[in-house]
Amino acid sequence: MRPSHLIAVNSAACYVLAFLITTVLHECGHAFVGSWLGSAPVLHHNYVAHFQRETLPVSHQVLIAMAGPLVSLVQGSIMAWFLHRRYGGGIGSLSGLWLMLLGFGNFLGYLLTGPFFSGGDLGKAEVLLELPMSVRVIIALVGGALLTLVAYGSTRKFLSFAAEQSTLGSPSTRLHFNRSIIILPWLLGSLVVTLLYLPIVAIISIIYPIMSGMVFIFPWKNAKRITNAIALGSSSLQRPAPWLYAALIGMAVIFRLVLAPGIVL
Image (cartoon, rainbow, N blue to C red):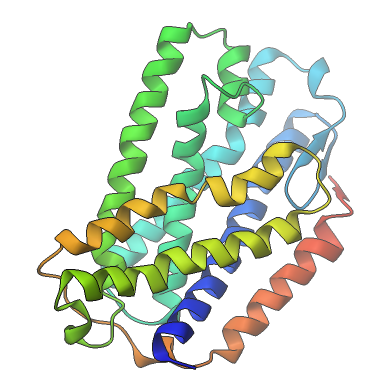
């Protein structure tokens, strides 16, 4: 298998693993806060069933709705700190980059869709708080702007995973590298995540994996404008990574066999 293909495979594995971890942490946020506040939650793989949420005060319902996105924000912030201290590298750093982007993307994506999707976490909180539509639109614009900045800002991070400086020598080679490490993993990973998300509980569960990654088009296309990127990547990205695949399989088993049936909290 060509090195670029192995980079795509390894990045896809990192992406799916990070996606599953992000989903579980997000739902744990809803579930644990719901349990604390008395909503009688049942934690599933990609959603939480709250059997007594409607009986709670509005303030408690808002906290439960916001808990998941806030956990994702904390996740993104922690991984941003980690990556600031460790630039470039191998599979561990690449997994951290995906965890950062998916954490920030989850939080900012909910801000962006709040006015249009009242069933979403932050959209639900905005409805419960009876925020004027003008305020909700402003929040969405801020969320969209920040999400775009995060996406563009990740361009250099992804390019730093190149093992050789020659890979970054021209706009076409930079685009090709970021296609291998960003776009192909997103497309392949979204298919895998969608299958793991089954059965369909809500239509958003099916469209979210692919739609949430549309923002990754920005760092891919932006690669041609980055002229001073430094190749700091490890050659391990161009080799099979059995431990990564084992970790992914283990997480998928937990996701499907433990969490999908539901855990009463």
